[in-house]
Image (cartoon, rainbow over all chains, first blue to last red; front, side, top):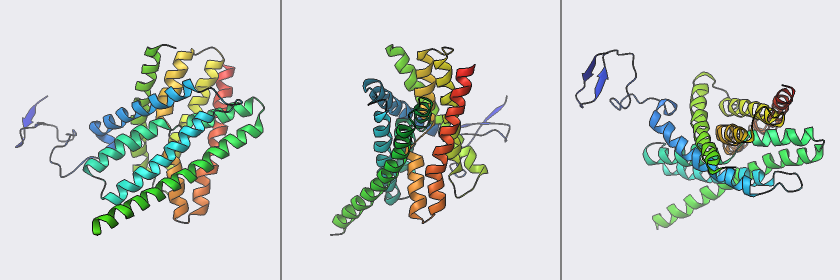
Length: 169
Length: 125
């Protein structure tokens, strides 16, 4: 294949249909198609998974209920609400803010929390004949999770208000 | 369980998280709906697959190590509870009561049914 050098010294494929990463900066490709951003998410996802699996393997189920997964999901929901609210109030989703959202939000917290375990553990409780436990566990996670997300957003709003108030004085 | 298996599960979790963001972006370019379709489809497919893997492990077709790497790692990283929960709260804050409740409760019921079906299939193989 033939390659040309553009005015920035970057190599361009002769075939104009080929995608070139960060070529001009004018037309930026969406986040999910950029390897650098996906790598950032992957790195965060590794850390989040390590924390979740570490906690899960160390903590036995309580009366057959996967309480540790519930705590992980609720804590993760709170932290994501807080993070996204603080980032959104800080300004546009670019630069360092986007890096933080991808690394910490989509990566660490996305990898830390899990929906598939919630669904499968509930199905296993039903399969084992503990219908009441299944109901309490599943609905409990979703309701506490929503309350935690809401709380995280609220704490983020208050924190931002206090900070900008102090700056204004 | 070896340290190597744990490390492999963490790497798989990173791959799963990257896969989630890729799938999310891909679905968003096609589906523009009030319900967060991307997160829903990701969590539903992940739940069915984890059910299947758990069934296969319980049927002794899949070893415990692979259950950890593919289940706890890959699918744990691929699916996400925090985003689903955040999107529910955003919908409720916009007074989209029905859409918000469907996103929380409706999706949960379908995901559990999907995981149960996957588990039953895995066990029967």
